[in-house]
Length: 318
Image 1 (cartoon, one colour):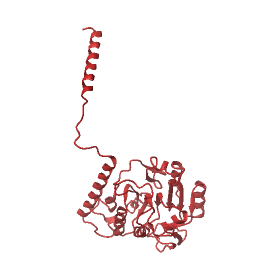
Image 2 (image 1 turned 90 degrees about the vertical axis):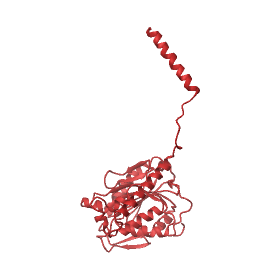
Image 3 (image 1 turned 60 degrees about the horizontal axis):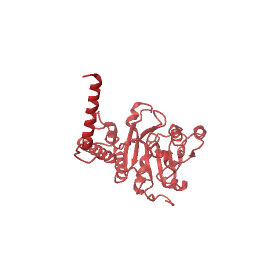
C-alpha cells in the first residue's frame, strides 16, 4: 500500500466513525443531578461546624475560663474550633502583607460594581494600609474611619495619606457617651487619654444616613466583646455584609463561645482566620486573632444588599 493510499484509507475510516457516532450520540449516565456551587459550599460549611462541635464535646467542652491558653492539650486551642468554614470564591487580601491587611470577599466580583459602597473602619492606631488598599481597588467606595485614640501626628498622617476619606475623632461603643478606660492591661489602647467619646453603631449610621455597610472593619483592642453583646441583643439583622474583626482574648472563654454562637445565629460565617503574631512576642497569637465573617441568608446566599429596612433599634431614623 502506497503512502497516498494509506492516507486516503485513514481519512475514510475517520469520516465513517464520525458519521456513525453522530447518528447515536454518546451519553454518560449520571447517578444524580449536578449540584450547584452554593449547595457544595453549604455542605462544606455544615460539615465543618458539626465536626468542630463534636470535637469540642469530645475533648471535654468548656474546661475553664482561661482555656484559650490551656486549650484541650498542647495541640489545640479554643480558636481552632472556629476555623474558616465558608468558601468565598473571590477572597483576597486588601492592605499590606502582615499586620494591617484584611481578607475580604467579593472585591472584584461584587463590590467593584456596587453603588453605593460603604466601608467603615473602626480603630486604626494610625495603620492605614487597609484603607489605602480599599481606595486603590474600590475608588468609588465611601471610606469612614473612626478612632478617638490617635495622636495629633497620627491624625495628620491619616488625613494627608487619604484625602478622600472621612475621619471621625469618635469610637464605637455599646452606648452613646464617654468611654472611660480603667484597666489598660485588659484593653490594648494607646496612652493618649483615659476618656473617649463613643457612639453606638445605630447612632453613627443614622447620623451618616447609612442603612447598610458593605465592609465593617473593627479593631478596638478588646472593646469588641461588650459592643457586640449589645448589638446581638438589639439588632434583629446586623446591617453589614461582611465583618473583619480582630478578637482579643481577655480571660473568659465563655465570652468567646457566646460571641461565635451569636454570630452564627445572626447568619455570619467565617471565611478567614489569621493569628496576629505581630505584638511584643509571638505569644500574642494565642490572644489576638483576625477573623473575617460574611453574612448569608437561610439559603446560604451572601447578603450583599439590605434585606429591607435594618431592624436596628439603637437610634431614630433606623
